[in-house]
Amino acid sequence: MTAAGGLAAVLRRLRQTLSERQIPLAGLAAAFIFVVQMLNFPVAAGTSGHLLGAALVAILLGPGVGVIVISVVVLLQALLFADGGISALGLNVVNMALIAVLVAWLVFRGLTAVLPKTAAAVVGAGAVAGWFSVVAASGGFVAEYALGGAGNVPVPTVFRAMVGVHALIGIGEGLITAFVLAAILAVRPDLVHGARILGVRRAVTVSMRRPAVAAFVLSGIGAALLLVIVVAPHASTVPDGLQRVAIDQGLAQHSQISLAAGSPLAKYRVAGVSDAGVGTIVAGVIGLAAAFAIGGVVVLVSSRRASRSASSTATRP
Amino acid sequence: MSVGHAHALFVHGHSRVHRLPAHVKLVALVVFVVAVVATPREMVGAFALDAGLVSGAAAAAHLRPRSVARRMLIGAPVLAGALLMPVVGAGARVDVGGLWLSLDGLWGAWSVIAKGTISLAASIVVTAATPVPELLAGLTILRVPAVVTAIAGFMVRYLEVIAGELRRTRVAMASRGYQPTFAWQVGPIAASVGALFIRSHERGERVYDAMVSRGYQGRLPQLSASGASTRDWVCALAMPVCAAAAATLAVIR
Image (cartoon, rainbow over all chains, first blue to last red; front, top):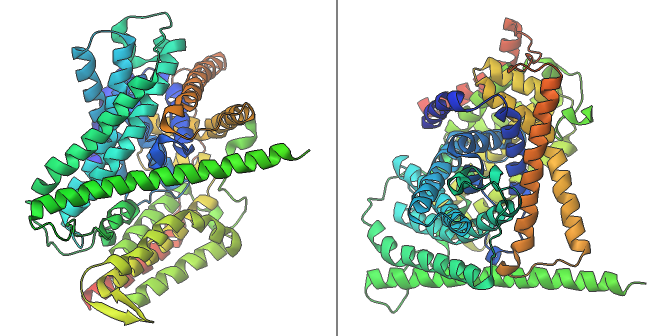
């Protein structure tokens, strides 16, 4: 319902701004996002499956077109490819199109307003906006979960699982958003809606050196840790015990990650730590470390296998 | 150029289900999925009825069970996730074949698997029996704004073109020895995605120019949309109405 309302509002505003010229463009952009979402990045700490693309599309095409493009992608994924589910369509549109795109755009605009008007600032803001878009979408899911009065798994647990995991996934999203922005700025800066503040008509090259990447990854991990440490214990003031399973309510398609909430650390307490708050934090940190370790192992194993198969084909005459 | 107008999931045919107007099928699908999802999970009989209805629809559309089953695999990750629920779930536990499982979790897993599988199968039947232009025309009849359906049409049309470009880029990268392992090696992938966006954008501009040169004046020609007779509605809605009746009966009792 909210999805329909929000979409209608965006459409109304868009009818004034979206020229007929942009319709094929938006269609192509939707196909582009769809394809990029299919692309599984073998990197990004192994935790990120694929790109959401909300921040990317918001910065490249502007927030209005961005919302429509992501909505169309989600709609067609549900209808044609039976991915994401029809009953969860409204939620998906709200989370991935409305919340993610608009949050990404607000963050991007806020940052670019404060930062110096350079291409590097646009790229950096893109990275942060990418991170926020993913975290905001997961936060949107948690809010809906809480509002839905569903709760076999208590809300704080879901919050920690969803937002914590997505704080990590967001690092990959932010990185790739930034790199893609840098690549486009280097060739066709005039295509980047969000770079209009630069007033550039010529290519600008942003060097993405390793230290800058490392700094972003580290700050992302830091933010994830911060979420776990600061927010998680306080989140438990949200009342739980509402009975009715989220999964029954058609949230099933969303729920894989909240299912992970019931891992061995399910109670988010570590034995031997008496204070519940500290225990929660320690458990959260261990969970984060485990996520990273698993991601690293997956990446290493898959790359080993890839290199082995590559070398075996290479030795063949 | 004009080969790929049917999407990958469409199965050509002339069955009863194929001939129904697309908007009727879409309404029926949504009502059916809502009815299935709203059915209380303890009502095993209702789910059996729903599953029977979907199988009947698939048979009426002349879909081979094998191909439907292959497409169902897309839901496998969710189902695998559901299998974890009895192991990690809270509440009372029961002994199942030597495993000490959560009763609540077992019901939860059953609920996810039954509802997910039936809904997925229903949407597979509809997409397999409806070509994209009709689907989009159906969405227009259902008051989805023309801007959205136009964008969706372009998206479906150029999906495979862009996917093909990406595939060729990746082959080119792999044949030049690019083999990412760590996060900081993401650069070339991102650069290729950037190049892909520029190509998509420029293709969009060319498509627009081509449309203008063919007489485009800001409105797409009306997609072939056939009206629906009462018989079509009755025929298509029979299935969701049965499912809804089963769900309601289950709730009342």
